[in-house]
Length: 291
Ligand SMILES: Nc1ncnc2c1ncn2[C@@H]1O[C@H](COP(=O)(O)OP(=O)(O)OP(=O)(O)O)[C@@H](O)[C@H]1O
Ligand SMILES: [Mg+2]
Image (cartoon, rainbow, N blue to C red; front, side, top):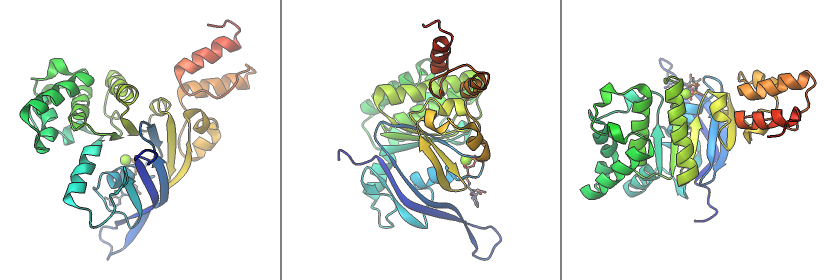
């Protein structure tokens, strides 16, 4: 299947039924066309109500589109006659992590939580053990294996939720604002896990976020605006025009804003930057110090 995008979305539209209305519907995604290649780390940005979570739910078979198609690794998930075997294959290929870890926890003990998915796959217990240990290790939660999930911090719970998805050995993880309920350290820990999974294990990441600094860590940033794709490019490309982002009710990462402000003051930089490490590099060069 080389060359086939892992996710291929073609002209996807989706409407919600209006509550109380007599069969009235409101279209919230208007013809989304988008490919995600294996191994990509994509951030999805967009103001409240722009359609990000709706798109995530369509990817995870929670919602069905009005028209258009989604293919995951060549399997058309939007096919109404999708077989149970295909659904199982898809559930293994693509995992979802939501905003509130409390809503996705099913077990009382951390390692039981992580084992839940592989147990449902009917795997032999020795393999479940191996997968759970590997997943706990990957998110840095081995020491918490026997702890009650209720006693974990938000960031620790979110890492357990990610481990539960990892134990299914998915090719892709879609995360819908996984850090928005966490404190700064919890956010950092979860971001580190996301980046390591992508870089070291080649897991494809689709990360929905409102945090521009987190989005800047992705290889590609997609901006949704009122149910349409408005921008799609590297963080440097997408964040190069702060005024345009403002019209989309978004902002730029802090270091991009700093560089723009310094440019206005006459300091000369080469290109836009989106990540702190690139900002330091550019500043050192501009100030003539080198590194
Ligand atoms: N269950 C629902 N029934 C009806 N309309 C809905 C439902 N869920 C979402 N919507 C509407 O669909 C649109 C897209 O919502 P969605 O939740 O996908 O946006 P979002 O980009 O995830 O927003 P946020 O940043 O606030 O999470 C919004 O106008 C929202 O009001
Ligand atoms: Mg949302």
